[in-house]
Length: 130
Image (tube, rainbow, N blue to C red; front, side, top):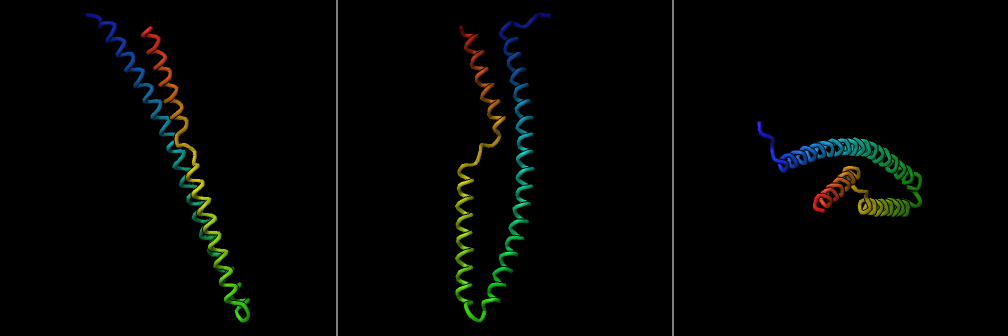
């Protein structure tokens, strides 16, 4: 049987290596995606529980303060509670905005691997041209 020309053998080798790299990167991406989703779901559940319990606590505290000061300063207490809750809402909204603006990159290991592979392939191509 006739052997294939060196050019075709080189192309096959490059395609086999590219397929191997692609498989490795997809596996790494899948692992990072699974990890990110697990953290997101767990954080969401914890946050939802904290919000519900915190909201109930604040509502009961507000009702208690209004009951205590009903006869003397109910309007002042209601306005004070409104200002405290509104200030807290604004502070948390600003903090959330800051966190979203400065969030870390997703899939850093996958991106780093792709950059390393690109540099290696460019280096190999430069050596073959020389």
